[in-house]
Image 1 (cartoon, rainbow, N blue to C red):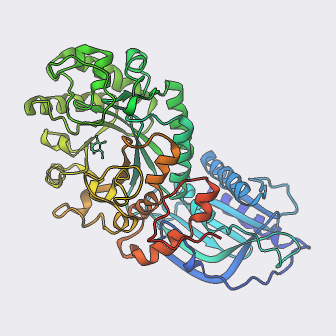
Image 2 (image 1 turned 90 degrees about the vertical axis):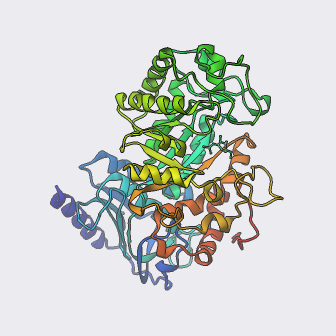
Image 3 (image 1 turned 60 degrees about the vertical axis):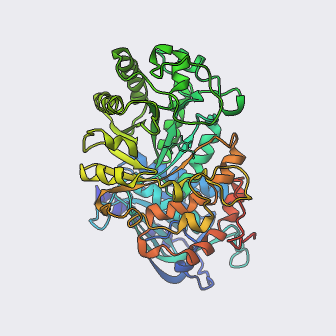
Length: 524
Ligand code: TNX
């Protein structure tokens, strides 16, 4: 199969080389190593020439895996959006083709992870090698970032987008690079989440964690327990109308994320943060008080009743329905700030729910508090505020996701004057959000235990895309680099120059970023 693919590639190049109308183009000197790529690739070698992207360029992909062809289609759509060029994918009958972009499935041992890729840019061809379609998808994000905003109309008699030539060998540091949206405190529509996914993909994130329930709202339809959304979905912080995803909406989001090679991690937060569920079905409540709808922002007052069998049958239904719609390997049980659950009850609860998650074929993730229970080594702890619990979980063999609130919480204000956000953990200006090394941040946590990083965006203070984006951008872009690039590439001075050059993308995408004064934004 490899030989057949290579043969097709060589044949197409030969065909293109024979085109009589092909003219030499005198490209200006380029420098691939100076391209403002984020995340910064592992290795870049510049060859100072260029590939001219124009209407005579075509995209070909390995055809042994339809997912590679889908990556080619995705690239074609994005090139059209940026340049207006309409490039055919796998159309071998076009005789006008002069230059090729070939997306190739390769089993080379140099491609060490599923997301690794190699990009070879020459004057007549671009070759992207990846083992999996996921790797190819990450690689085409690099290519998208290399296409200039403006065509060069002086080199030829038609518009040509000059892409610097050279080689890029790239692979992520962590297999889990995530961000979280709290759609519970305020609800965000399917389209708002899709817009966030678009930007995540461009910066090579691979995981979107959705915080689907909390005291203020239940956001996912559960067919066997309809009041969760009828009652629990009708509230949000500040008294707004709330909202929820139908199962069709959720599947639509899962499919949209999958098209971007992004896994959705669903979270049902429990045993605390459960007021909206208990308002819907009061038998769940374990705090001994009458339950009322809640639209404030305090935490830690609610709990499920950890001693009732009916609570666990309810959770079996809820987790089962969500797991069946979630192709990813994880289910997040929350587990944070259960201040009114007695400690033995909390431990009993986490251990019982872990079994339910496993029964439905998923690995459990929980906030760092779950390490108090005797959790299975396959379960994952997400550090937000307690290093000792993350270390305890790691000692038990569990993997750790790093989301330290002081560094990685997207809902922390930039400074005391910036709009939206909270500051209970820290003010996080753009440089501070970038200036930490996940490998060494938690003293005593072995780096082999770190599965990746995630930047959560809690939504007590934000209720629409513009506000969400103001907190997420530009900091989210920095977390993309921290999760992908090797430690030796993490350098604020270098990063801030590349960040400044993201303006055309952010503006084109209509993303409302916070214009931090620490960055000399390049508004070309
Ligand atoms: C703490 S972080 C919480 C959330 C809040 C957030 C606000 C965590 C696991 N729990 O319930 O929304 O702070 O920053």
